[in-house]
Length: 119
Image (tube, rainbow, N blue to C red; front, top):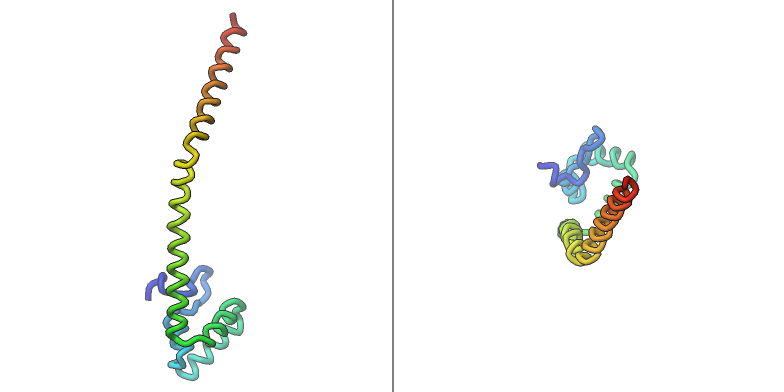
């Protein structure tokens, strides 16, 4: 299973729970030893155990639906932010032109003052 499909990626060197193993746990397809191992792991984790409690209240189809909706919303938000940055410059084109014009006048004024001061 790829890291993209892993709900809890291994970032800090600790063992993480894969999406496949979590789904098997929720569906009751694991052996008693594997279930006990996951329950011990969840006892040490805060947020993950709360998430599993919430997932246990949903059916497998509802869980997959929720995950798919979350992923779709995240993709939309990420792609939306990229477009907003481009739109920002397009919408503020006249403000940028005004700022550049003021800076050019400031540089010209500085050069004139320096030139007049030396004469």
